[in-house]
Amino acid sequence: MKPFEDIDYKKDGYVARITINRPESYNAFRTQTLEEMCHALEDAELDDDIRVIVLRGAGDKAFCTGGDTRESAAGGYNKEMDYWHTRVHNMIRDVSCPVIAAVNGWAMAGGHILHVLCDVSIAADTARFGQLGPKVGSFDAGFGAAYLSRVVGEKKAREIWFFCRTYTAAEALEMGLVNKVVPAAELDSEVDAWCADVAELSPYAIKYLKHAFNADTDHISGFENLSMSTVRLYWTTEEALAQKEKYKNRKKKKF
Image (cartoon, rainbow, N blue to C red; front, side, top):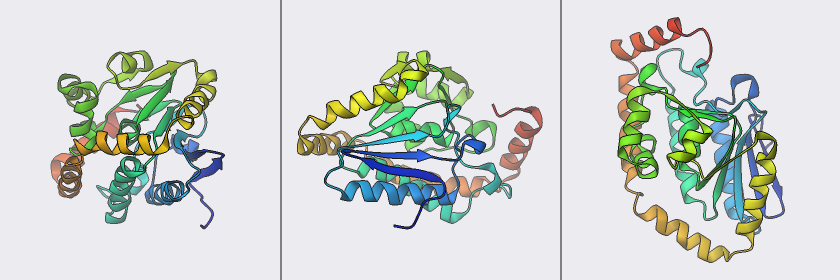
């Protein structure tokens, strides 16, 4: 396996740790980031010693803030990024062990979807959550919407997308978006405790349970493919380009 540039990947006994290491960009992902995440997930899946995977963002400001806008300056992301983006979503679901999101800061847009797709989300009390798509001329009508409604309920999922509000960690816990909230200084130790707990259980039982949980929502993969194809067309429309420019001019800070 060639060295990674955009992520840190290490295996610590029964835990595989994937850290998006682009803190200067609030851990926004680019094509290379997603490709590296897929290779790391594949390596973890093929290692029989790995019992749990932890996904985190580097630093203390952001878990992940979605796609790097420098790759979408022309109006949308390239086809290669779309491929790896969808692949990451499917691999988080397909790996046979639990994936825990350690949400250490902002989880926005595509980064918000990443944590939603993880089997468990543990958040620092400083974490913030939300969607940006309709603000910037974009959307995710696949797992980002259809699966989110399974997690928080349709009313709340519609609120998250239709109004693009930001939610605190406490609000995320209340709506069932995360499993637990702890002080930021305790996030890693809390995640380690959850990893230790799952490592004591039957790996085959966990594997079959994960597949069973996913079976009822696997059809959303079809929506995901349709959504990615549709949004690529939408990105080139006058409406999407105007909305993106409007948001850029209105906001001087990140969110």
